[in-house]
Image (cartoon, rainbow, N blue to C red):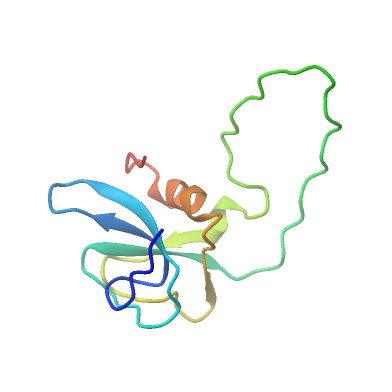
Length: 117
């Protein structure tokens, strides 16, 4: 996470290197952000606040918890969307920026088969 002021979009984005590599990053700047042809901004549709599922009681003995295959229950995977490369520096009207905490989950959700880290 960097403050990439005057260089890339604000918020969560995919960066495409010239060597075909890709990374997920988050720009914490809120002003001075630019659309860059090597980036794709990730945004979230606006909608009603999701509700969290009930939390199960903790177990008393240590066990290996399964790795969840679903994103954070606070945000439905269908609410994330990926803009075209280089077209925006901020999320469009009617959408919200993805938070830093949900950036990697959002990237994996919208990235589908992009082989993200």
